[in-house]
Image 1 (cartoon, helix red, strand yellow):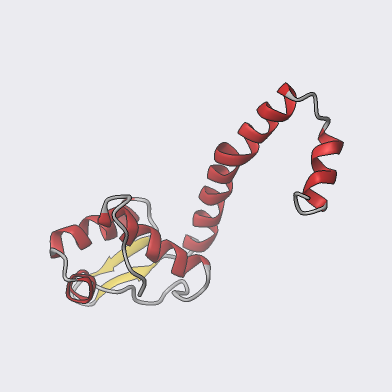
Image 2 (spheres, helix red, strand yellow):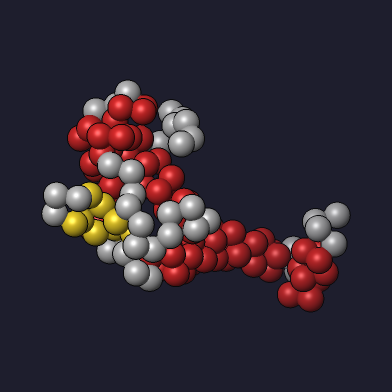
Length: 120
């Protein structure tokens, strides 16, 4: 398990950490996710904080609860997370890049060439 930083709320970092593990197949669909108590003990945080992060993923259908057993990764969770990340990538990077390229009068071909050269 990774460390948390002070830049964002811990519960968001917990949700992101679990999401990353699902995307990288370190937590395959159908497997059990770390429990609230495991997160709380490992990171010495309030269990309510850990639960808030886990519940974000439950609300999105990424995790589901098996009564008396724990939280598990839902079928289709990985693809759902990948699609969300692709959309966020587009909004955070591609759209601003295209707006800036338009200001600089760069064609899409010029942008593709720059990308293919690795930004050099």
